[in-house]
Image 1 (cartoon, one colour):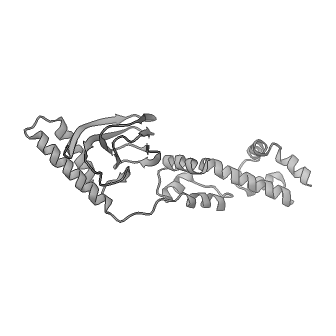
Image 2 (image 1 turned 60 degrees about the vertical axis):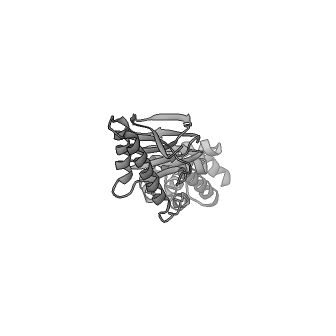
Image 3 (image 1 turned 120 degrees about the horizontal axis):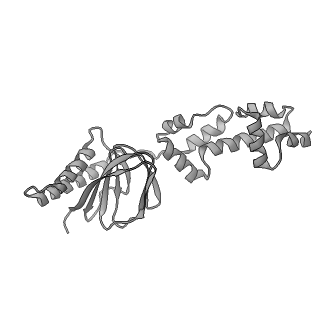
Length: 245
């Protein structure tokens, strides 16, 4: 079989919707016009943002989660050898992949003469553009360890997680999901854990009282600190302090 486009459609994805795990017999080119969320392709998690696109090889398990209303273009196609690995990629500055996705969709819906030939041309164009994308200078993978280290070094201060995510190059929802997948806890819970561990050390080794300890570790509410401390260590901080004294 030659390189050929097999299907194309546009779709809307409602907020807080998901597409369950599935596979297709064809390769997929999915252009996310306004979607936001994440896609898991062959057990790898990728962020979905407006003006990104996914390449999903045939017979590869994948599913999507959408956290806001959005629209997309889907194209199923066959080729003997995909020129780029599975994943989610950014469009170029000029939006050429978006234009191509829309052009494929329009042609597939049309009844124009030579429709099949035009779709074959568009499939060749898609493969050439993907080949060029694959040959772009390789970017270093985004490293969550920066965020983890930042939290651990600044736990006593107020941390704005949306800004931290942006500084790491992530959308907030994807950042939160990916952080938990890698480290087993959310960024917020990691911060709380660090604060509580630090508070325990202070109570055991200094003359600071419970309220002073809470504020020094970044808690803004002493009562909330006491509740969290007891839940974490099984004893109230005041009692822990008295036992040490």
